[in-house]
Length: 467
Image (cartoon, rainbow, N blue to C red; front, side):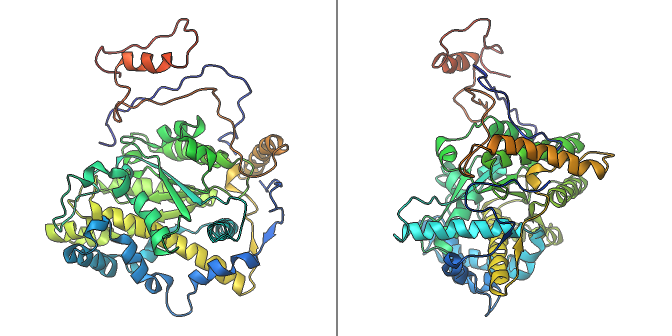
C-alpha cells in the first residue's frame, strides 16, 4: 500500500566523529573541481563521436528511428517474447499511446545541457572500457530511483493478455519500470552491454521525507556507495499527493531531497542530474493531482531540474474512456487505480527513456552544429529553498553561502566521485512493510550485532509490532 500505509524507520547514531557537513536547504556559480572538467564552457569531445552516432536524427525523430530496438527490449518477461498476444499488445501500446507526438507532452523542463554532455562522456568511457579501449575501470552510467510502492512494482504483473501473474508478482524488482528502463538502455541502445545500471530504492509507503533520510544517512547498498549515481530520479508523486499539507512538500521535503541527492556527489557541479518524475496514478480527486503537479513544475523551474510527466502522455486517453474497461486495461495493463498494471510500467520506462534520448540527441546535435554548451550560472546544487515571501535579493547570498560550504569540503578532494559524509557512524532503517524488523525484539537483536555497550536505550512498542 501507499499513502496512509504504516511506515516505520529508525535511524541510530552510535558516535558522531565529525561535524555535520551538509549544504543547507536555504541555498551561485560553480566551484572548480580537480577532475579534468574546469572549463565554464564545454564541448562534446572527439571521444564522444561514436556515441553521438546513436542519436542521428537526420532521417526521422529518434523515437521512431529506434522503434524496432525499443520494442524488442520491451518484451519482458523474455519467455513471452514469442507470445503473439503479448507482443501485439506492446506494439499497439507503442503505436497508439506512446508515439513521439504523445511523448512530447511529457517534458516540462529539459535536462541541463552541460550535464547531458557529461553523461554522454560517462557512456562513452563505459563503452570504450567494455570494448577494451580503456584499461582503467569505467563504471556504467548509474541511475538511482526513489519512490513508493508504485515504483517498487506493486501490481506491475497485471496484464490484459493472460500472462500468469503469480510468478511475476514475486519479481517486482524485475517487473517494475526502473528495471525496464535499464533494459531499454542496454538492450535497446547498447547491444545488450552493461552500459547503464538502474538501482531501485523504492519501498512501499515511502513519501519524499522517507527518501530524504535514506539519502542523507546513506542507507543505501554498498554497491551504490561504490558506484555513486550519475542520475537520481524522484518518483514519489503518488504518496506526496496524499499529504495533508502539500505546501510542506514544496517548501521543505523536495528541496531537502534535492540537497541530499546532490550531496551524493558533493564535489561535482553537474552531477548527479536530479530528475522530477510524475508517473500516472489513478486518484479520483483530480484537484489533489493537479495541485501537486503545479508544485512539481514550480520546483523544476526554480532549481532547473529535468522534469518528466508520464501522466501527460496518457491521462486524456484514460479520461475519455473511463466507461470502457477494456481500453483502460489495454493502456494500463489493469484497472484505473493507485497501482496500475504492466502497461503503465512499460509506459513509464518508455517515457523516461524518451526524455533521455532527446536530451542526448539535442546535446550531440548542438555540438555538431558548433553550438557552445554552457553551464547554468546558478547551479541547482547551491540554490536555496523555495520560501513564501522570499526576495530575489536573497537568492544569490544564500547560493554563495552554500557554494562556500561545498568549496571548503571539496578543497582536498581529488575528484568529483565524492559523497558528503553521513551524519552518523552507523545508521539503518527498519520498515514494518518490508519485513525483517517488525517487533521490538527484532530491533534489539539487530542492534546487538554492533553495540559494544547499551546504556539507557531500549526498543519499545506493542509486543507483537513496532508502531
